[in-house]
Image (cartoon, rainbow, N blue to C red):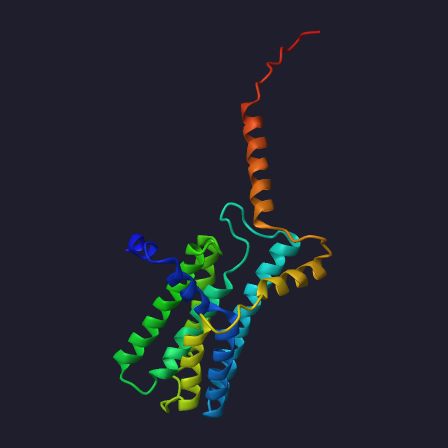
Length: 236
């Protein structure tokens, strides 16, 4: 199945990957939380907000830590959580949970499951387009899924339907995002913030991390391969 997915045209993956952009999903998530509060579920809305902001904060902090201080994992090829994968897994299940809230149980479960599968495809697209390593995409997806999963365990959304204007806005944003909306340069903003906080002149990069790891391995191999000089006891 994965082989078949990789054979899909590049345009498909670039269109799909844009569905995970923060400029699209974060406003949708905030709109859902506002609707939840407006419906009288203020405590639940506060929980959703805290979980979503925590996921966003952890993702941003991981990127700042790597760019500014080189905190990552060369072994895992990890430089920070994938924001696209995180946002998709954090917001799509909440969106579909709200859309199907008034339906039967099988429809609610199916809608949320579909949302998680869509988010998984967004995570996969980040690998296919070369934006992230498998570990970054997977961990980003898991972080977002944890946030939305915990949010959904706080209880079902209200049985009332989403306002038509809100649903129409969400659908229009999803359809237009891949073509009409410009790409938001969030990486550039995070990089500038990381440099300001760390005091570095240049950002720490994946290339630097992997090069340093390669040099460490070469030195370790040289130490292992170094000849052992026998010590003769009693010799003057």
